Image (cartoon, rainbow, N blue to C red; front, side):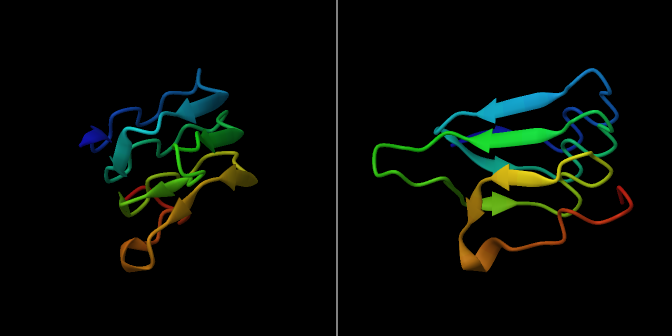
Length: 87
């Protein structure tokens, strides 16, 4: 399983948009936290048309400028990933 590790892009203010490939099933703790210029995230659809992640951890997208995202989660993996703080 491919993943974006914990704090992988933490505080990276040069990111404005990202597209996440179908092989990525896990987004780690605070992976994009504090990326204040990040405005959009798109989860590419797999062969079944699904945009679903297995797990998106706490604060993965906290502190970003994202207003709308094209992604979905399995019901058992819903965490506080839009929170105000990073930890």
